[in-house]
Amino acid sequence: SQQGEEDPQALSIQEGENATMNCSYKTSINNLQWYRQNSGRGLVHLNLIRSNEREKHSGRLRVTLDTSKKSSSLLITASRAADTASYFCATPEGGGYQKVTFGIGTKLQVIP
Amino acid sequence: EPEVTQTPSHQVTQMGQEVILHCVPISNHLYFYWYRQILGQKVEFLVSFYNNEISEKSEIFDDQFSVERPDGSNFTLKIRSTKLEDSAMYFCASRGQVGETQYFGPGTRLLVL
Image 1: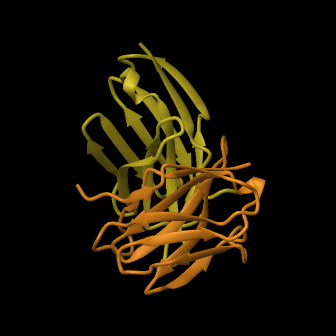
Image 2: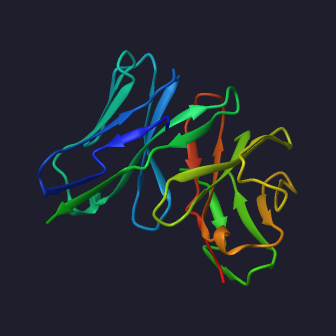
């Protein structure tokens, strides 16, 4: 089974609402990263949270990490139509070289 | 802010042809990666590169694939004889130190006909 799995796989909300996406993982990690991908485009890094951190804020984004539950969440507050994208969590693997493993992502649609 | 760049943005090739995808990682980074994403699927790891050699590769990265850092700034992925199933978005990524953020380029969309 996969290291990072996002939930839900699809989310549709009205502009101005908050969007919460969850990620679960299976093995111990030293950090977890969230990325955004607009349709057919590149991966934009949103945040990195380390295993000794519980919460990080960046503008309208809030990332939490619960290592005891092996889960993370990404909250987007006051969503905008431009937030429409797929969101992925990525966890490192492979010792020092640390490739990242992506889940299938949450496809967020923000309706104007 | 420094960024990873990739060229070309799109590449169309005939099956059996060789393609070379180009990447310029962030200048002070030490670890380099290629990933790919087949349309509608997950982003998959292909290969990592450190200290001028491959440090890890996936099952996808068979003998048809190779990577090179020819001049200390560019990082290339070569596919010797493309197959239809190589059609995908290919992402280059780089990272400074262990535990730091991995930054991705905008991708090259490869279409094999």
